[in-house]
Length: 206
Picture 1 (cartoon, rainbow, N blue to C red):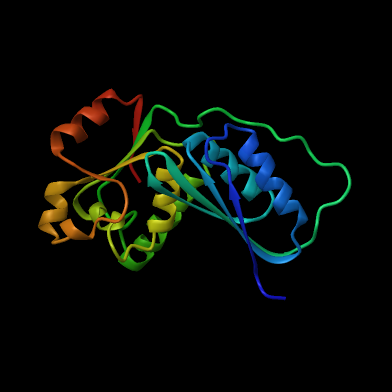
Picture 2: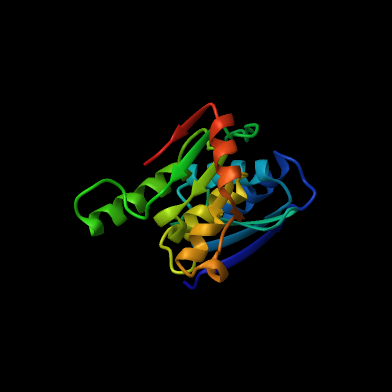
């Protein structure tokens, strides 16, 4: 059976409505399916992401503008859900007051290929946290992770859609010749990086 595609328009709706609408479609599908949900707030993205993962779906999210977000749920070999439906619950904004600072494209010292794989795993693991960072800073070699060709763009776009502010050092982008290749977040400067770190409850560095 070919992959079925569904669209759920939940623009202007507050939780739990986007989750309820999406879950109704998700529970009815059979086989392989892709559900694209349109919402206009980050909390809805967070709750849709949480619901989708709980249901075993692959979830991708992207911020299209300040008031438009797309959440895509992909499932394989799914069977329709019958019987008693579990209650939909909404969790408020799940961002904490901490910052993740990434200054390299590799994690740890030793083998660079292993380090790249570890960093990719680290950034994916951030997407799975119950409490997301308020801001993520990328500078020096870390600037390459937010630009064209990065293996972590989907994860970073998902975090941005859930309300995480992603900032990349402009001087670093210029140094590496990547100024025109930024694909997620915004450009920042050293003054802002220092201020962001200073105001954070804690700074995490991989």
